[in-house]
Length: 227
Image (cartoon, rainbow, N blue to C red; front, top):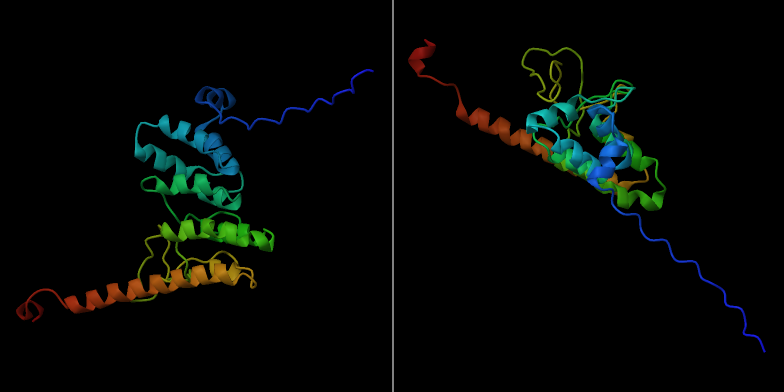
């Protein structure tokens, strides 16, 4: 009596190993620093980002690359990472010194916070909660959540330090459609709206404290100086 044939079970696939530094170097050979950082942002590739940063002589050089690198349609590194939901790379970028948190893209006038909200909106409803930390990460890094009127300033208004070279009312950022990040949130996503509302209240409260301190200081100099 012959033995029953045995069915061989295919071995389960092993998890893909983390790319080594040598493999990463080979994969990006000939690519520019701009191309490498954009690729890392799109693929949430932290090892590739670390390899790139390690090749820089100073933190200033790293910041200059992050703040200056753009894709073909004018998205900066933070825009790209936010648009692709690349949380880990976005966190690494924001951890670097002197990174501009609120760059403006060319096509829509969006900040990275606008892009993060758009990314969450594009997900299925059941995935919203898991993607909310992407928005929270930018808020915690100091992204401007409020409204900006980009009309010329009137007497008594100040230049917003977050929009270098632009004279605006100090009330936050809006895109070309004149929308704040909170106004882009899907109306059904109450949790994400609450995150941005709390951030707006915190910014306004902080401004109120600064204004009160300035008022308490009063005019400088003696009374005789003003005569």
